[in-house]
Length: 347
Image 1 (cartoon, rainbow, N blue to C red):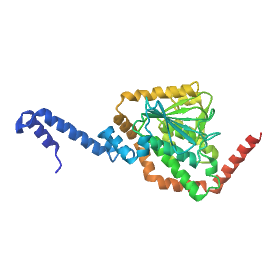
Image 2 (tube, helix red, strand yellow; image 1 turned 90 degrees about the vertical axis):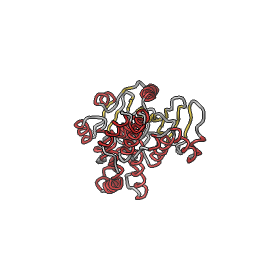
Image 3 (cartoon, rainbow, N blue to C red; image 1 turned 90 degrees about the horizontal axis):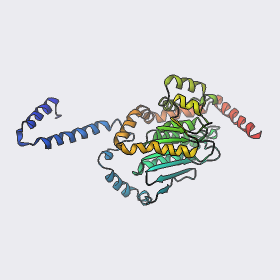
């Protein structure tokens, strides 16, 4: 039978008066502990996407479980200042600073980091590896290109697509978004180049964005005849005001670094990539003094609606995308865009 509030009040008065032979400090400890467990149990359904109840017990216990279940990962925990971690892809480089616990994920698909299926798979594996690594205290997402963060989704994945591949492509993109937008660790995008469309989306998934000067960023899908999905829009609405997002999304506007800073699309401007990385590390370092569980639950609570929508509508979103990209008018638009790219390259 559930314990009513009146029962709790009555029992508390008895304990304070010394009845039942129970000492107050002990019983108050029991009450506090029971209250904490109850709150955690009530929170579990809300944070089911990323929250693991074992977090509230002990990081040490989780590490023991991790070592038992993932011996290859445990073996990789080498006592070095900078540890290279495998993302099972040459398209993604993953390193970990052992001293700070800050990981760096670098997109490495020349020349412009177009997000094809393989690059997305590499990113997903990197994010999943960091979720499994309890030493991770934060992540920086950046690019190996000197002028491009990511040019966005690879048009060739959508132009005259093969059914199985285009399905894998979109579901992997969904999973990348879920993993990055709903990550348990704090994230920063060190945007060291142009970042249109899908590149902008990746940066918006991060909690903080630092951009180098003289580049552009934005969700410009409408200019390609493509409608940005609901979760793309949700990501932008988490960064800039609704009215500004509406104008930007409907017009496919690209923002310069200075314009992006002014509107709130990015948080800081760096002089170059090295400065962007340094500023990213400084931002992440502040969380060393913040309780990790409190920080994580706060983040997931703020992002819960968008994450839950995706979890419940992945299949619907996939079907909408496949139906839309298969439309003749969309294929014609993509063809014209590709012809334009070839004409520019020929000059």
